[in-house]
Length: 253
Image (tube, rainbow, N blue to C red; front, side):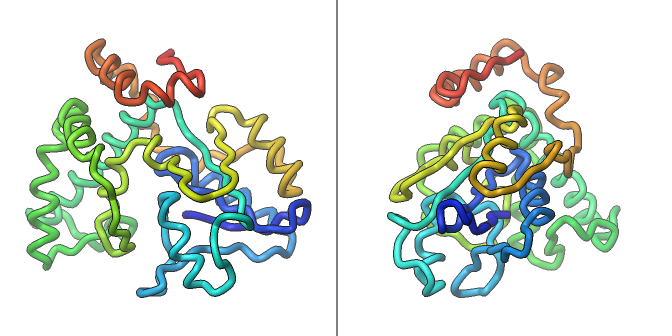
C-alpha cells in the first residue's frame, strides 16, 4: 500500500511508493506502528473512493490534485521506496502469481472453495475473469514464459489505473518502470536488503526509531532463485534490468 506520513523536519508529508514484492508491507507496518499521533495517509481513487495499492509514480498527481490538499507534486512531497535484487524479484513475482493462479484455476474447476481463500480476489461467476485467469495459466508455466510476457508488455504505457483491475497487470512491469519519477522533486531509493540505511533514513527524516525491519508476508519464493535460474535466464534478467543492476550494485550471488 502506498502510505503517507508527515515529517516534522521537512514540514511535509513523505510518501512510500510500494513496489510489489520489495518488502512494502514491512515498511507499512513500521510507519503504522511508529506514527506517534501522526495521521497515516492513503491515496484514494477519486472515482471509486477505494484505497489505492501499489501505485506507480506517475499516477500520484491526479489522485492528489483531486484530494484538494495538494495542487501539484512539484514542491511539496517527498517520496521513498524500496527495491529488491532483480533476480530474486523476478522469481518471487513469478512464483507468487503462479501459486495464486493455481488456486484460482482450482476454483474455476470446482475443486476449491473461494471462501477458503479470502485473501485472493476472485470472480468465479465472471466470464471475463475466468477467461483471463485461464489464459494466464500458460504465462505462469515457466519463468521463461513469464519473462516473455513481461518483455512483451514492457514498452507499453500503463495509462489506465483502476483499483478494480486484476493486480497481475501491475506486476508485469519491472522495478525500473515503477521508479518513473516524472514531476516529483525527490525520490529516495533503498535496497530492501540494506536495513541499516533504511533505519537511518526513518530516524533522521521521519523521527522513527526501530531496532529491526520486520519480515511480513514472507512466502520464501525469493529463496528459490538459484533453483529456477538457468544461466540463460540469469543473463536474460541481467539484460532486462541492466540499468537497475548497475546503478544499485546488485549481483546474482
